Amino acid sequence: MQQIKHISTIKIRIHQILHLNFWKKLLSFTGPGYLVAVGYMDPGNWATDLAGGSQFGYSLLSIILISNLMAIVLQYLALKLGIATGKDLAQACRDYYSKKTAFVLWLLAEIAIIACDLAEVIGSAIALNLLFGIPLIVGVIITTFDVLVLLMLQQYSFRYLETLVIALLVIIALCFGIEIFLAQPSFIHILKGLIPTSSLITDPSMLYLAIGILGATVMPHNLYLHSSIVQTRMRNHDEVTKQEAITFMGIDSTIALCLSFFINAAILIVAAAVFHKHGYHAIAEIQDAYHLLSPLLGTKVASFVFALALLMSGQNATITGTLAGQIIMEGFINFKMKPWLRRLISRSLTVMPAAVGVILFGDKSLAHLLLLSQVILSFQLCFAIVPLVQFTNSEQIMGKFVNQKGTQIIAYVISFTIIMLNSWLIFKTCC
Image (cartoon, rainbow, N blue to C red; front, side, top):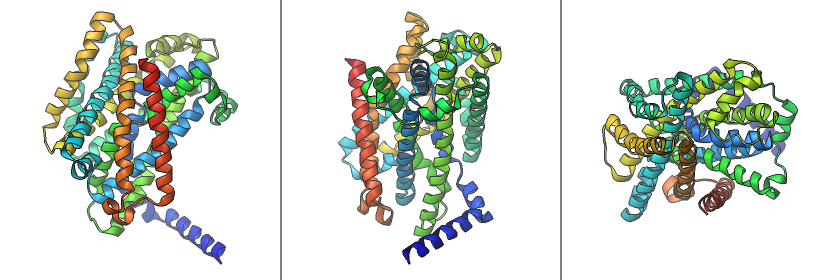
């Protein structure tokens, strides 16, 4: 009897998916997931993916896959919190924690925004240098003002901003589609790389890099961002509408994060097929990858497309970083600031260390600054995950939308795993 009921439920689901109304509703909820997905492919990910592919071939593809699955769960919890409570993660922290605790969490979140911004500044400056020969110090200064033009779109409609982000994501995906076509990777090795092996644990250098990839993948500011922007789609706040929104925005988020998986995996695959294959096992800097791609693949298109994708990635991440900064400030301390002023202040705090580093130590300092930004983000991540899991596991806060037992267990396992691995990464990096 239960089997017949189960089959009947599946048939109903299939009928709903095939119905035209399903696709119309999905389209109406599409957008926020792509803004969030941008944070999973920012320049900070490039260094770890390039290093992983050049040093270990396709072996670390499984880590990118696992990291992405974790991200899908965490972002689902974030959107569910925003829709069910009408509060973003920052507002929830302000309302359910003491003032001192909320203030500390706000400061940590602001530091994370600056660290994330640092990676975007560095990535964009490097891309401008590679594409147009613009000196790095000039590129760093240009990035102070570039996003102000993009923020003008937000004044007209949030949809315009989402459309721009999706367009840039499509360009990045096409760029890496071209790179994979030129690199001609082994698809058998790609499939094997998606399966975890014991060497991920037994090989210390591989384990270290695997944790680096995980730490660079899940970004704390994305959890604040997602819990807020999903509310732009809410018109009614009854339980039926909320459940529908959670379902469709969950699909939107999952599809968008699958795109980010493709791009991160593509970076590692290209590094494996080009650098590892030809004996270049120590490629950790973006500039080195750019200069080696063309001679190894026999076409200048490879390097140009690579740098173009980097520039698009930096600009995309800049947009979402700006939005997350606004949400964090307004949510934690209920203080509103004009977007352009907020952007100028946070970007100025980011540009100073990047500019000083370039002036004193040259372009080699950028790799160290990029690593520093990822360590800071890894440290702050636990202070975003713990409240998120705590709130979504609370029936008092979530009501009927509280996490089920299975989801609670998965959330606890993911949280514990990320916190422990990131703690180990910070310890090994700083000691």
